Length: 309
Image (cartoon, rainbow, N blue to C red):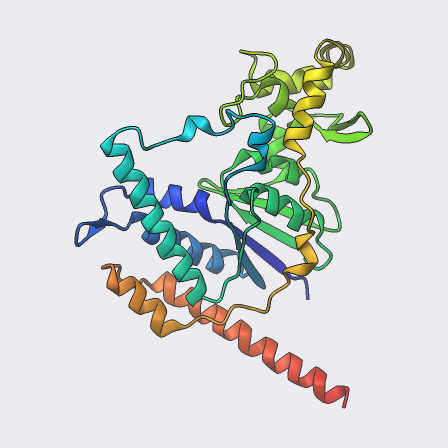
């Protein structure tokens, strides 16, 4: 059986759901994040029919701030009463989502000092089981993973507009050749180079201001321009690589192979009902799929046990 793993970027889905329905409230509390997350989760389960599901969550304070103290300083939201209320509402919805995932028996991965995309990278690059991995996130930091897709594994990203593949990525950014090089004995792909050289990343300015990622990609694909850029900015690029490729001591791909989720339908409906969210047909279909899949796995495991006894 070709197994599919679906990975949920919790904060990314939270923000997308919350800002899609910012005025959705129940008894004075904003609930758009919970509703949007549940809606997307069930939609993606019905669409992709994953065998396993897991979620990842940022865990500040980030270790990258040791290299760049300004990292993510541009994201502070509590300087005014309105921003403080917004930030509190996001935290409230995040806690509800974590409660929802617990009810659905979907594991949440966190590692102190690291972000969701760090964990997703480790899961994908450590993969030994899954033929296909679906990443539910609009974070373009993850685009490098699309370049890992090959005849052994298919990695796709589920964005707001739909599935985004390696072919979509290459076409959008006009990439026709030379997708990776070695810098100081480290293999660096074209997207990592573009983010360092032309991207404004979480409050960290690009090495060459004003060119953007697409022009940085053109520089990468031209050997003369690339070598000139690497020579002129050698120390800065090497320093940024330490920041971007911060190592995680654990390898998550094998350590976090969980069983198929076993959702608690009663508590699922109670949680949504408590905050005025009506269950939809897509919710019921997603839960029925997980329950059926769990039953099939139990039956298969039982048959395997009988064969070996």
